[in-house]
Image (cartoon, rainbow, N blue to C red; front, side, top):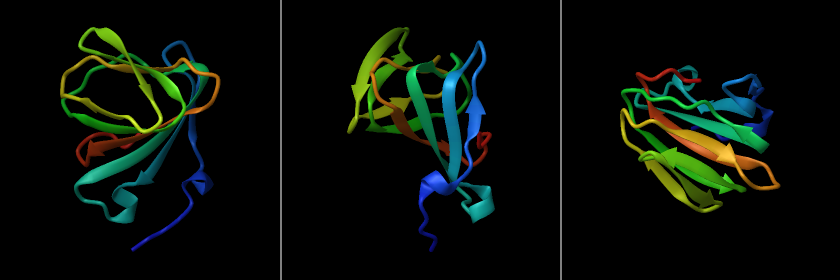
Length: 116
């Protein structure tokens, strides 16, 4: 077993035309011996967003803090702290922070997906 404070893991920062003001961390992954899933945490600053994309695996996400919108089924859907989000495989999706506070999203992907 391993218990640790996630904020001590150095984030990968994304800030360009495709992704604005996003910090991503692999919390549990291959380096921890996880064979089935990868757990990531994304912190998106107010006004920030992830890139719009699709891929051949599903996402399970949990909004830990803040509020924002998730693109899915071709439309923007509001989500706030405490909400769970499921994105099926091959569905175009994106996240944007529409609030005034940090949007913190926990994201699970299968082990065959890129960790970050």
